[in-house]
Image (cartoon, rainbow, N blue to C red; front, side, top):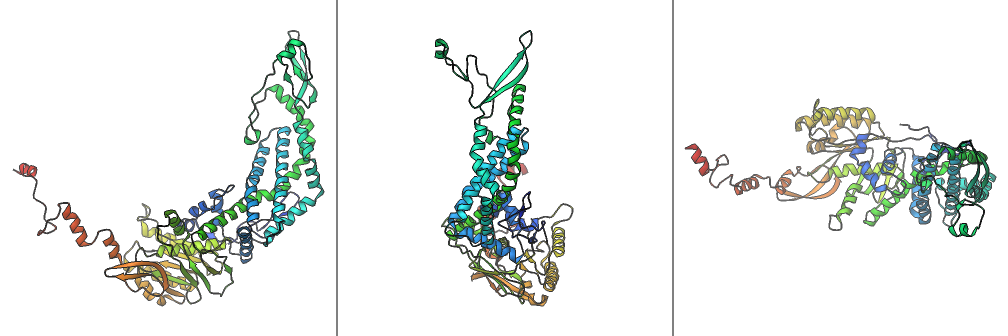
Amino acid sequence: MTHGNGGGYYTGVSGSSVPRLLSPGNREEYNVYLSHHAADDLGVQELATHFQVEGLSVREAADILRAPTYDPETLRYRQAVFNDFRTLPGLREAFRELLPRFDELATFGAARRDATSALQQTIWRLGELELLVECVEKLSTALDSETRPESTALNDIARYLQDMRSRTDYQTMRARLPELRRGLQYKRSVTLGVNLDEKLRPVEVAVLDINDRPFAEQSLIARLFGYTRDFSVQSNVLSSPIPSELSTQPRSRIPLAPLFQEIEQLLSGALRPIQRELRAFVHENTAIFRGLRVEAAFLLGAVRLAERLEGMGLPICLPTVHSEGHTETIEGMYNIHLALRSEKRGRGGDPVVVNDLSFAPDRRFYVLTGPNQGGKTTYTQATGIAYVFAQSGLFAPGRSADIIPVDVIETHFPTGEHGSLDTGRLADEARRLSEIIDAITDRSLLLLNESFASTSPHEAVSLASELLRVLSETGVRGVYATHLHELAVRCREFGSGIAPLTAEAIVEGESAKRTYRVREGSPAGDSFARDIALKHGLSYEQMKARLRNRGLLRDGRSPDHRPDPSPRDSQKTS
């Protein structure tokens, strides 16, 4: 599955390559196919909320998580950058401080496009130049510190900035910045010549001079004693309303009277050479920071999430990436959603249970059974999340991980009790499974959760058996969580590579204590649904006692016996 134009670098107007944090240059981008069903079933949008830092929206984080890569070189490239962000706090802090500046550069670009005059465009260009110099100097300093990054991406960025700083045009612009700023700041007033008609009405106006000082009203004392000073006038100075901070309202226009518009055009004429000089330089050299904004913010959010999980005592690791034929293992895997919900509940909640996952030629696809509410769905979802994180170039939730990148991640989770009004739930399930069969390859990951639960157990086993036979022949990896224990017992009949997993439970009389640990092997008993019914008071004895307490059942009488009618009912009968 190939997406994008394959470029690992942004390209400036001069054709120069601008390095990126999440993709190496000169390589085609291979993104995992992650359907919107899979993204919803794995809770990608919710996970993205935990990446939020200044300069990154939930949508931007979710977009990156929805497009992991299955190219081993790109994966290792991203991992190295993530590891630098994680181990170099000084570099991390520099990026965090610069994120608002990267965002401002994008804002200046939008403001410049909306500017209607050369004067406004020059002001925005000059603001961009100031920000550009600040970003180049601060980021260069951070990358050239004593503890240098090890990743190719950050070293490429360091060299790119070093080359920029050594160029004559950058040095010239940086040196001229105070002069250019003064050139705008010191244009404070104009002297006008106004021609009047025979009725003393102004009919013509001309600019006589542009001054570096503003006109001001002459003070009362100066008028009384006849003092005169340059740029002071005896008449009132009238003003036109102007936004207090132009930089905070880049899309607004200054409300100028026609006369003021004429003055602006005259000033713009003097500034057009500066505007042309800034145009090409600023646009080309700010491209690197416009590209870094989202990627750097995403990595900062990932590091913060990793630190949260480690603070809870949970392990994280950088996965080792292998090619085909290697056994895949994730030791100590856990569900990040469950971990974060546990953190929210506080120390009084149950500890997060970790489990192992292993894919090999003789066990590529698992049939996972066990008691109801025993952790089957949690484990199945955790598997998908682990691959999304690992193939995004981030950490894997576990002590160690060896993975072979997958090209498709597909899921088939319950969509509710009922299907559409036209088809019904089973038909919706069948249609969705048909789409999945068309999407997966022998290098894909497929996660099924209670598929075929909408039909009878006998029919469900028959349908699931046929599906498992096909999956065995394709070689797809995955997990099928189901309450159909017969499938786990018979899974070897469906072909090579299909193996049983079970969520353990400790039997205590008629009930079972869930351990939430998953092990290889067939289930030892049934789904232990009765103890859940007992927990909710749904055994025959419990329901009978509850109804008796409400006066609907009485001792010594059958459940069908209705209570004697009330006196009012007797009167009505009589």
